[in-house]
Image (cartoon, rainbow, N blue to C red; front, side, top):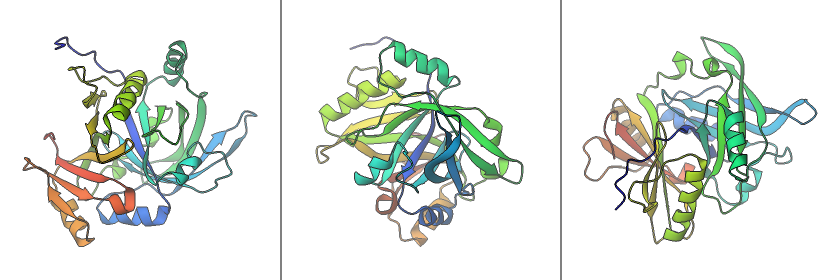
Length: 290
């Protein structure tokens, strides 16, 4: 058994992104669950000629004290958005956005390690809250998405961080606090290949050498669980922390969403969002662990 201390990860979990068919319906669902969402915003990008053009997508964000969730609809399939082909595979959690303080440096590192990554891109979206208004800008690059990928991996640097976490966006009625991680399920061989990609992306593998279980980021974790009933690896569970679970459980039940206590835990519940988002939501009381 390898007993050496694992190397500390240098990459965090910036956000996860859902590709959904109807942005208004998804906004209503999460609002009813007690989340505050940002106003609808259209993504724009800077093309090679230096012009600001549509990126072909619109979104709402659920901002948290650590990490956030993006709900995104492809509004123009002809605009060249990287995830337009994902619509032919499935709706649900597709985007795994990793946080870096220097996208340029990390991009150069990936190229030096001969990883297949795309160019550095400049995107933006408008932000308007009671505290501020402006254009949120971010620099990112990606590992080009393929249909068999469990998630689309990109590395993100926020250039205007002061615009994306206004205090009013963090006071969720359901007391949501942080994004804790994502659990992937699938066959063993697929999970091992996904683990190799996560390690190349900056996550730290489990210390037992299995490539299964918890992969660490600076502020969250990615869990790989074998499920022989699934043919391909894909996200199964989104885990978040809340100061209290009463509100979100009551609201989920009012919407007719199945809820059950997490096995062996007094401070966690699982909400079934598979019909709308293709995933379970595991809600934990802040300070507890699965």
